[in-house]
Length: 198
Ligand SMILES: [Zn+2]
Image 1 (tube, protein in one colour):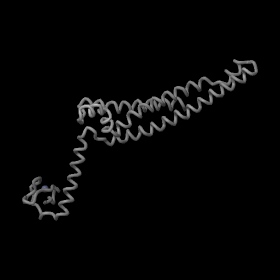
Image 2 (image 1 turned 180 degrees about the vertical axis):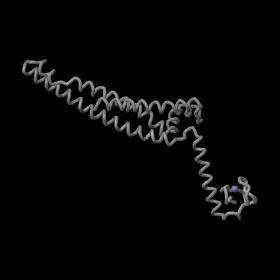
Image 3 (image 1 turned 45 degrees about the horizontal axis):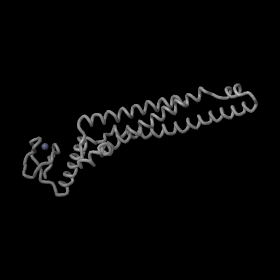
Image 4 (image 1 turned 135 degrees about the vertical axis):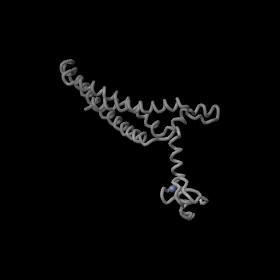
């Protein structure tokens, strides 16, 4: 293998002038040098064919996927803390009701100690966080592991007809669309839950 001194194009030993820039070529490279260049070229070609694969995971998808995992964790924490706070509110109301009933005044005392506004806000927070959890659980795997999701989606075909279906252009487009829509709805629901809580 020869490598052009001017433009860096690798080419065969038989050539005397560069295939790319037409200038004279130096002596052939040593076996090790030639191998290193071939390996680098192979890596580049592999990366290029990876990118044309329907299941290629782009850097953006990896970032969205990781954000989705963080969002999922945040939503679970929000559900837990607002659920706990809600329980405290209801426990306090029940305790107040029991006190009031025992002291012969079932309405005045109980309604005074119950804070329905905070309870309904926390309720909304729990709903928002649960929606976020559902959508992140659905979008994170399709962002990070599209091949695995496709495998699960088509397992019936695989078992029945014993072949590996590749996604049609339509299936590919809808997979792409649904993972971004899922991620977006998850983010909106999480933002709503956080807004309700704080
Ligand atoms: Zn050249």
